[in-house]
Image (tube, rainbow, N blue to C red; front, side, top):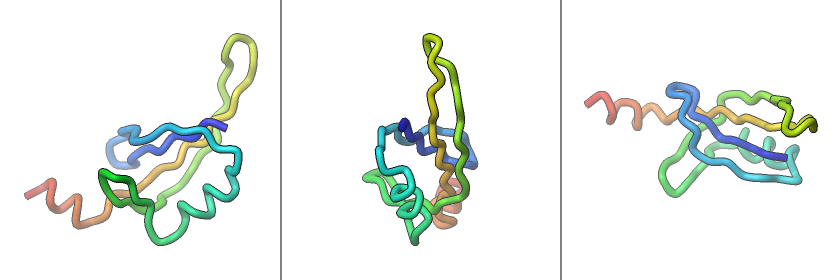
Length: 77
């Protein structure tokens, strides 16, 4: 299934991937942190979207992430 990671505050898409273990992926992101080479985030919520491509319905898991408070404060300063 296609999986997209999105920042809740800005709507910015930070990563798109394909996973065959959606339950395991959701369990992992609901842990302490979600870390990418470009930052650390916390799970906020997720949605399961359905869309039509060339007459075939597809599913996409969208995982919304919160930025850590210190990163938001640094942006303000």
